[in-house]
Image 1 (cartoon, rainbow, N blue to C red):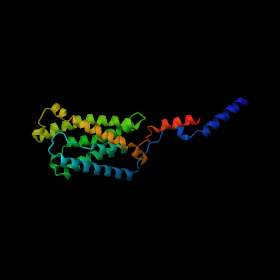
Image 2 (image 1 turned 30 degrees about the vertical axis):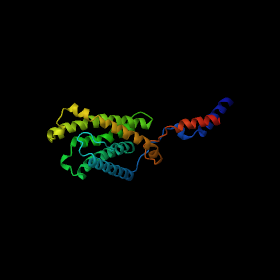
Image 3 (image 1 turned 90 degrees about the horizontal axis):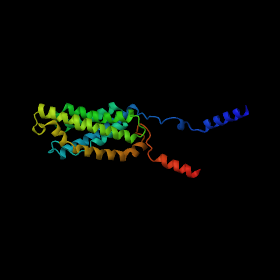
Image 4 (image 1 turned 90 degrees about the vertical axis):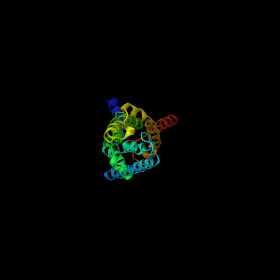
Amino acid sequence: MRKNFHEGAKVSQQEIATPASCNTLPRKRRLRYTQKITYTATLTAVALVIKATVQAIFASLPLIRPTLTYIPWIIAGIILDPVCAAIVGFASDSLGMLIIGAAASINPIMALSCALFPCIVSLCVRFLPIKHLPIKALIGTAMSALVCTMFLSTFGLYIYTGIFMGVVDYQKPFFVLMAARLPQLLFIAICTVAVGALLPVMNKLNLLPEPYEAKKKKSDGKAEDKIE
């Protein structure tokens, strides 16, 4: 009886001494309604400025235009929910065409592709059964690059701009247009690296949907071993 009592006392003492954070998974961070509106508007504005600048500088390039628009899109996919992220992509494309005076050439398939790009990133960040946030963001960006940039956007250029609008530069076989757009993957890779460098900053600002602790755990563990 005494042994059982002492064992029970030890267990209860251990439970009291153990922090609650050790027994629970990290909580998901949720943005308030006003924060969602603010960040959606801010990222849309940044994407619009980038789009207008690229259009002004590289207007003579029909198929390939170096752009950093993917940076606010990927960030939107990471910190915003899928709906708000899709709004950033759609609004930055459609409003961008209006700002540069090309409203008549708005491609609905391209607009859908731009909306899906950050939306897919957001879905992967929130629902993939992986603990490491950067890996989820990387997978989402890779999926968006293939599905949206390479397939859906190319299809929009081929069907709508080439056939329906009759633009000669886009009246080429589908896979020829896709091959010509392969350098876009390089621009996406550059933007992905840039976003990765910004993750610690976003974590300090509490913008990430879950805590981002890549190297701290290892260093803390080593420090505890040395102390013991």
